[in-house]
Structure formats: structure tokens, C-alpha cells
Image (cartoon, rainbow, N blue to C red; front, side):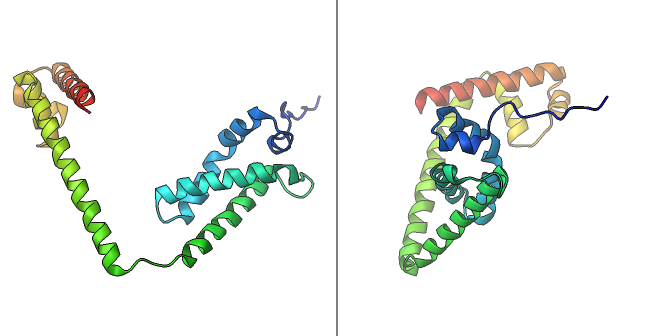
Length: 185
């Protein structure tokens, strides 16, 4: 008795996309999203550029889905080809854009750094206030863990408390801090 090959019960995603099946778009993202993200991330200078590229790639896939011919290539190969062409186009387009002057870049970098520092300081002040509102034993456990890098076991020995109690204090304390920060932010 020979085994019968298992067939995919759903028709090709690209054929369904070409016919305008609304469920096919989500299925296409689920099936090929990781592959496209991997390519985009590899060929993009930053994660945000990769995200933009993924969006443009899937738009191109949807626009060209009706042109897919399974006799010429598999779905992954077809999508991979579109992705590579789109990434090349994006790279060429980026090269054609005029570069900002070095002083403009320096100013933009300084502004970004300063705003990031100001934001980080504000968040640290809020977190510090939230930690001060904790019970002393929770605060001590969290500080030993975060500032001194001690493991839960080391904190347990240092504070002469059971390991499970230390874990509970840290978890509850961090949850309270998170709740306070969410209500403020």
C-alpha cells in the first residue's frame, strides 16, 4: 500500500490574491512575512527602513499577484523575486536623494540626543518616585537585583528570606512601579 501525497487543501495564495480574495492577504502575510522581513532587514540600513520596505514589498506582491504563473516559479520564489527587486529599487532611490550637509546632520543628531536624554531623565525621575513608594523590602529586593546585579538566590541569602518570597517581592514591586508609570504616562 503506497502513501498518498498530502495535498494543500487551500488554493495558491497568490492566485486567490489575484482574484481579490480578502482572506488571502492575511494568509500571505502569515506565510511569507518572516521571509520578506528577513530579506528587508538584511538589505536595509535600519529596522524602520526594513519595516517600510516590507510594506512596499507586500503592496508590490498584491499588485502583481495576478501575474503569478506556477509553471514558471513557486510562490516563495515569486515573492522573493519581487522583494529583491523592490529592495534594489529602494536602495537606488535612496542613493539619488541629495545628502544633507554635515552641519545639518550634526544639528539633527544633537537635537535627537538631547531630546532622548531629556526623555530618559524624566522617565528615570518617574520610576525613582514609583520605587520610593514601594514597601521597603520590595524596594531593597529590586535595587539589589537591578543596581547591584544580584541573582534572586543571592538576594535571598543577602536578605535572609526564602527564594520564593524574594521573587514575589520583586515581581509585585515591579508590577506596582509599572502600574504607576502607566497611569502617569
